Length: 197
Image (spheres, rainbow, N blue to C red):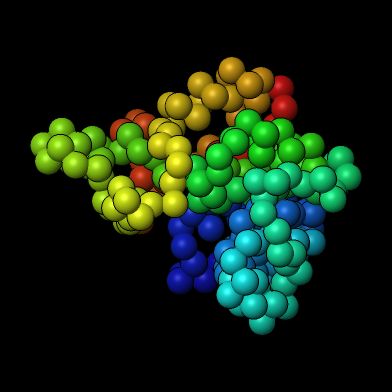
């Protein structure tokens, strides 16, 4: 893979088998889907709400539908995809449980990428400055953030236990490199693959 690829995209690509059927929920400008098509020869499809992002996807030759992932995936039959991706979008949806149920209905596995709000810099900023954190992983101020849920690596693990989801693989990044130990403290972003238990 090329050097200018975002690390979270590389971590996701590692978890996807060549030729897999992939649905990217909230695919943005299609950077990740384009990478997966080129490097993994996946059968790719995206869903995106932002029209400008959709135009960018179409320019890349990607199949993307205009839609709101929060209203469900009713147009897709059960088991339509091998993998569904929710990268940097889970924390922005209102009903996480509904979306994950729908995601794992249409795909056998899901890859969830999210910012870790328990990263040590966020903790220090709250403790010493008494302010909501702003960092490369959390670039918005409290009043303009798209995030409606603030979760940590540990929170997501407990969510999986409570909702009978099996964690198949987990990758973590911090400061532009992989994080291997103490991810709840050291990781800025998590990439976790889950399936029904």
